[in-house]
Image (cartoon, rainbow, N blue to C red; front, side):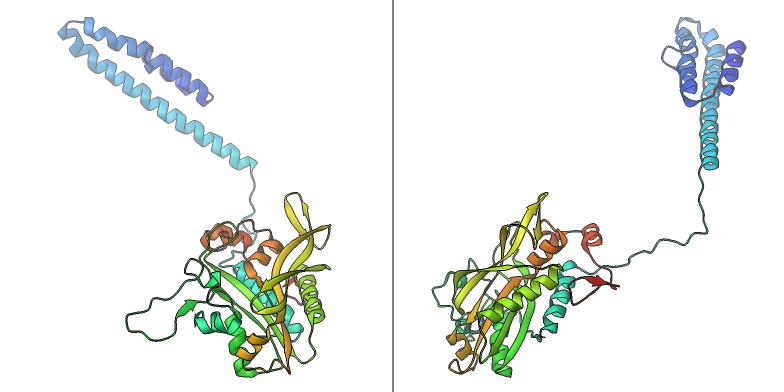
Length: 356
């Protein structure tokens, strides 16, 4: 018994690595190890012999396991010491800057859009997100049978029994702000209306709540040519490159004539590159303000005329900053915001870039 103990204690003490130590553990106390085999022999002994040999074998097994654990810990400590000698860390270096918060891409793009249009003389107008169906539909020449007025497309506010107020909706666009601005300020007028809007839709390119910016310019000699110039100036400033636009005839109840606006682009490595190539991407709707809309805003359509346009802020943010899914703007975690967010010192310049 003593010879067996001395043998393994010596071998354990001289083990050079964890692999050798594991081999010794198997040889000594594994299922077929020498000590394990001797413990199996206890069943063949007389009761008197078992009373003597049992405690000795158990004590030997415990001693070998203790030696194995101690040696394993010593080998780990030695490996750590060698690693510390090889590695080097300058603890006097300053810590990395920790960004305690970031600006959401939507907020950043609203600032960029506002900055660019401000340089062209547009002021910012705001209005309620819950509005009457008059401002959201009637004043914009949207008839009662129009699909947009159906409950499957628009969120209507609950009305208690006996409530005789006009129906209220979560605004489906920021166009009601245009009507309110015309009522308040009259003509001439030059505004943009950024803000949240709501529609009953949800997929990769639509969400029930999203952000929109609309523009309105009213004067005596304004035309579609002015509209085209304003949009090309905006897109060139926003994307930081010359961007051509293409107008396609369309129909909107609140403009006449109406046009869908495409911007020049090309697909490269699965992404859209704006301002080059032979492809076109639809980005907004526009047109000359319908005379009935001017009249609803208290402006004489025989004396004044104007243009209007509207685009999704979330979508132009996706285009510029390579965000693949519109839904990510509203249901992502802090890791997404750290990746796509902006530091508080990232200030938009008039050319659509960022400066610090």
